[in-house]
Amino acid sequence: MNDQEQALGAQILSAFQRAYQENEMEIAEHLLRALEALARQDADGESLGETAYLILGQRDRSTPHH
Image 1 (tube, rainbow, N blue to C red):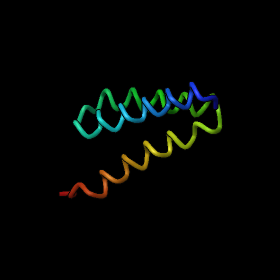
Image 2: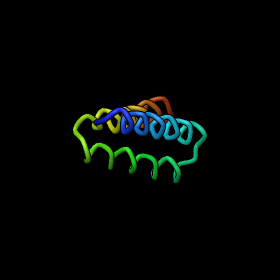
Image 3: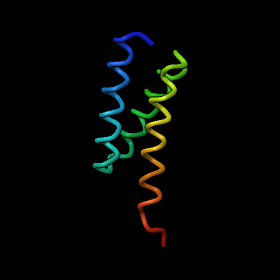
Image 4: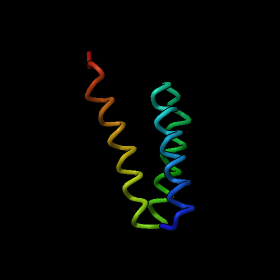
């Protein structure tokens, strides 16, 4: 992944985190798809998608289940 793609990925990940924290799930889903697309283009991009899924997992663990 070149520097420009890394910067784009970092910006998308940041936007994903914000959307997720603000409970904008539809937007977060689209941003997650963008991260997955970057990961498919280049194996180095996989870490961005993995980070996004870790964020999802952390929220699931911190949210009480009824």
